[in-house]
Length: 235
Image (tube, rainbow, N blue to C red):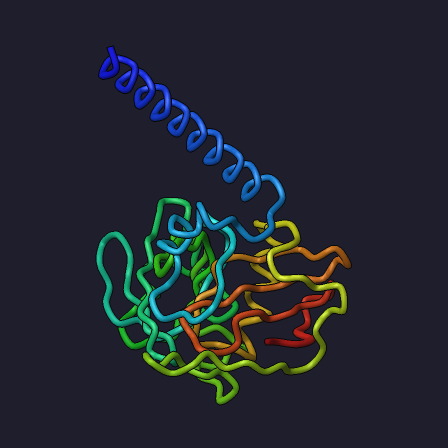
């Protein structure tokens, strides 16, 4: 009799734990996707898996988003090409049938992508892979390197400093992710003075300005662009 009651008690307890755990998971998912703020501890491991190794920056949002990068073409294949940024970050670029090309300021084809040339890539970023919507070979007014950017070095602490003006209302993890022309313009603006990393999202802030999130470098991780797509600050 005692054994049967004990077994029943254990079974009920296990069921309660399972239900409680399931409810907790639902609450955590709702909090992270609905509010856009930092995720809870229960979902941290899932989000962390999407960080760029050695980026040193936070990434409180999950899923691919509009972004881009600039660097030297290291290899070319039928499905895309490799890119190496000025700070040593390797980027995989995937091309599709809808990818458009420019060389300088003129329209071009995929044949313009040649090993050794500089390319600015805009598209959907997923960690260190970019599915390109636009490739600009030898872009104008886009430096290949910048002394402002601090490259990632394994074991080195993340650099904490500010440059220029940081929006007073800015709070990390808030805002609305944007795409399309707006994201492309903000990405190009941010990469002009700060090339070397990978932009993995562009967020519109409450004041109408933009935070361009940069990974793969020690600094800067957040580049701020105003409504005229001019860089105003970084941290």
